[in-house]
Amino acid sequence: MNNLKNIALILTVLFLATSCILEDVEPEYDVVGAVGTIATLTASTTNPEPGQTVTFTLNIYSEHENATELRMNRVSGGTATNLETKTFSNWNTDDSYVETFQYTVPSDAAGSTITMQFVLVTESNFTAERTINLTVSGGS
Image: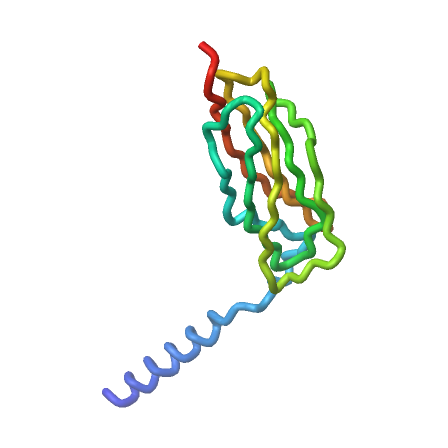
């Protein structure tokens, strides 16, 4: 009787274990696109002087879909103004990329905070964004 219980238990465990195998894509799940990733965003300085050039370095990747462009925007009052756009024609989803942008702080920005936004766009027009603040020295 004990052996019969053990066999039943083993069969039940095997049945439950095999029912937990997941498919690559669930039948009710439609893939509509993918979002890239801005893994790191650094600035050569976050406390620049007016007129100083700041270099931004980004480590980006998009492993499920090709990225098409990377935008550098300046955000002011909730509105983003595009300053520069880099486009990609040969994207490899197996690689990560390092991109740099340069921005010259306006001479009239002393004592203010500038918000820079970077947006990575994929072929499906999905976006990933990161922001960084520059606290401009000087002023009152």
